[in-house]
Amino acid sequence: MKAFEATLERLSAKNILIRLYKFYIIDSILIAKREGFKVLLKKRGWKVFAIIICYYAIRDSIVYLLIPYLLARNIL
Image (cartoon, rainbow, N blue to C red; front, top):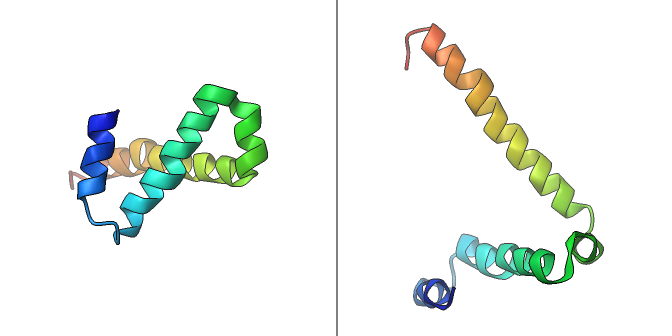
């Protein structure tokens, strides 16, 4: 994990995605692992559910709707 964090340090701190990943996502994962999911929900609130639902909705629509549609149309 320290090598990964060192790589993130070398990257531009101005990049918002890197900062989001470094400070929000990794921190949330560490909270969930160390203190449990209930504490994560208390600290982050409903945003955790919104992010998870959006992620899976986008992923599943691509995998189960878009790719079969493109295969049926011989586009892919």
